[in-house]
Image (cartoon, one colour):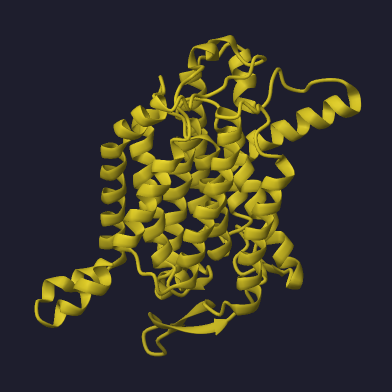
Length: 382
């Protein structure tokens, strides 16, 4: 809203021209979401306690987790609220991708809320039927995939044009590319055209990311901290993807208006940082499925919008490992009646090996940071 109200005033007072800059509005989005989350956090936590919306701890988990029984959950509600408030204040709402991100955040948040509600209020330990969750996630992913495949024309490959006199690069020329292409990290312009298969591929990305973050949300500060690391990496990618000269230099797809996704990710980073204040060990509140399903899903959608779907495997490597450990454990037990891990997801395996909860979280953070750095380096190693 600020952009629409204040930017036109630059004709009368040049200082308002600052609202055109992505960096300024992203910083504003981070700060607004962070402060708002920190301010409303205590009130939301007290309200959740009053309603007895406490976390139910699995009986077969590590014994050290028993003390967490009853800790308020559904904290993802005030993460979503802070993101929406911040992006409405600092973002531009004339871009279809931002509208889709907002709708997806709300839709997945509602699914997660229903899941939490059934678990916490109705004492249904299984929560919402898993196939129902996957169905909604698939619909959202399908809508995003159809939009990219059939309607989006904002993706270009930019090439630098050298000056014939001195050989220096002086500009760029653009060629539109089919949005059904997925680009292979570390291999320059190498891409695979999925054609109509891009739609089910988009569904798979949203489903897998949404559920992977949900599976990782088992230790204090783990899932939200990794989300912050991942969001920072994606924010940097979205910024360079929206800059014609930088994207041409790096030989990555240029995405028109990708900078607005930087603002959205800034709001997500700020809200997540504020939530981590209350979710750090010992956690005062858990984000629940309302947070994990929605935040994971929208980050998957951001990767689709930025045409870095395959790089997402590396950026979200810890989440991939968490989800993979569950798949391997279930498959191994059903096929061979043997467990590969002491307990899944992966973070519980290390707890069972004797690692303290804080050790697991910090070490997973370190791995997440290393993977994010490698992911960003891949933009140049081509």
